[in-house]
Structure formats: C-alpha cells, structure tokens
Length: 338
Figure 1: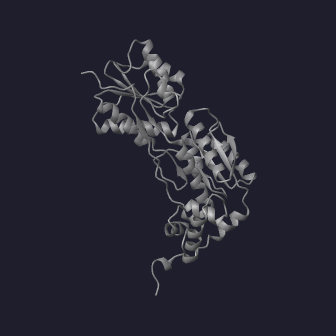
Figure 2: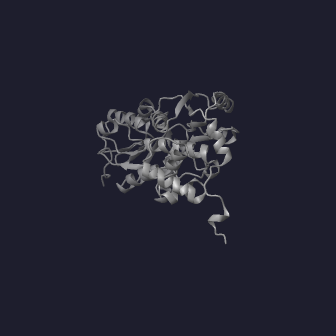
Figure 3: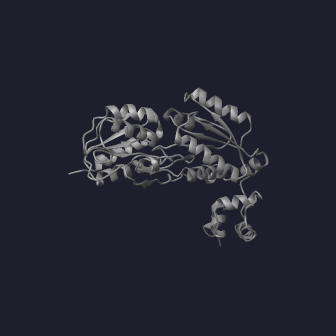
C-alpha cells in the first residue's frame, strides 16, 4: 500500500517539518556546519533516515564544487537603503561561513549588468545577489541565463521565486493612512527617482491609499533621495496650513523640514511631514520624524536563506512574501487643525 508521501521523494522542507526545525538547520546538518546542538542534529538525522531523504544529485554536485563565495552586485551609490541591505547581507553570509565578493555597477544598461555578472561567474562564485535600484535592471535579471543561483533584492509587483523585498507598497499605504487618520485631506508626495523600484512601489501605495479614501492625488514631485533634493523640492511645494507631505525617504524629509522652516511653516503645527526608512538620525531631528521602518537585518537574512535554498534545493525554491514594515509615530505629524 502507498500513501501520498510515498508518491514523491521527500525534500528538505519535509525533513524540517518532521524534525521541528527550519530548513536552514537541515542544511547545516547536511553540510556538517557548526552551530547545531547535538540534540537538534540527532533529530534532523533521524528525520532524514525516516523519510529516506537524499539531496538532489545536482545539488550534491554543486556542494563538491563550492568556493563558499557569493558575488554581490550593488548599485554603486551611498543611499541608505542599498547600503543597509549590503551591510546586513554581508553579516548574514559570514554567519553561514560564506565570503562576499562585492562589485559596484553604476550602469543599469543590460550589457553593463551582464558584463558584471559574467565577471563574477569567471571567479566561480556559488551564487550571485543583485541589489536593484533601477527598473531596467529588473528586466535584465529576468533575462539572464546563468549557471548559478541569482537572487535579486527588488521591490516589484511582479513575483519571481528568486526576488526578495521589503513591502514598500503596504508601508506607503500605512504612511498615508496615518496622515489621513490625522485629518489631513491634502497629502502631497515627494517621491524618489522615477526609475527606482522602491520609489515606484511607494508612489503606487500613496496613490492607492488616496484613491481608497477618495482624496485628491496632486501630481508628485521627484527627488534623488538626498537631503539637498528634498530641500529644493520643499521650497517649491504648493503647501497650505493643514496639508501633509509624505516624503519618499528620511533624508529627503530632512531637506523638506529645513525648507519648511525657511518658508515660515511650522512642523507639525501647520504641516505634517512623514518620512520612510527610519534612519538613525530620524529620532533626533527637530521635530523627531514620523516614518516607516524597514528591517534591513531581516532582509539580509532572507536573501541569504534564499541563496542557501537555491544552491541546495533548487527545485524547492518558492516565492517569498515581502517583509513587513513598521510605522513609527513621532512628533512631525499631528492632527490637522480644524
């Protein structure tokens, strides 16, 4: 007699469920890595034996050829988001005893990205991670045919098994919802660069939340993520007392706060200002900035988990749910004066 479990070969997830551990722990046991308690290792080995689990031949072949090096392609900018992702991914990789070979790519041109990826391939990396800050790179990533796993940190509506992200869209909707619940009926948006995936998802969230509340969406302005661009745009924003501004990131919000002071508009008495990112300085501004926190440490871990799974169980890779954001309410937003 056979049952459903006998109808297919067990995979790493089946072993993890039976042993009551994560698939990363199973991977550590299979590869004889440290940081696994003896009792846990014994449970995993028992589950492997019980399920007669055997990693795929392709995955085992990969293990024997590993260099334990991951290629990381960064955008070549000092913006807070990409820098934070790269930093926390490096930490997560070291925790798994991998080294990271980082390359900056300032050119989103398809040929340029392919050249960078091919260069990493020649160094025999086990996998490649891309931090995407231009929509053109997304198209390139989906068209690349490489012999090692490729994981992209990219905020996009399009789902892909090897794309991971923080939920920019829902984070933006939460920001606008907070401002609307404070009684602001006119909520302007200073967005990030028009080709940046994070900026586009935040812009989409802003539009959709306003539409859901039947509030007018004034055509947004765009900055370049810098405080200087926030200051320039802030001087020109068409604002009146009782309005609110959802700024695409905290650094631009810093510039907006400065510009509004120069214009004689008080924050939050006259205008509420909302940022995004929760940079370390946000709590110490005058006034402290209400913002949306992103968990870059969790994203770094998620990228590394996706890499490990793609290397060891390529057939088991599934789409990842975007990581949630967290609204941080401080003193730059206040209920609109009636």
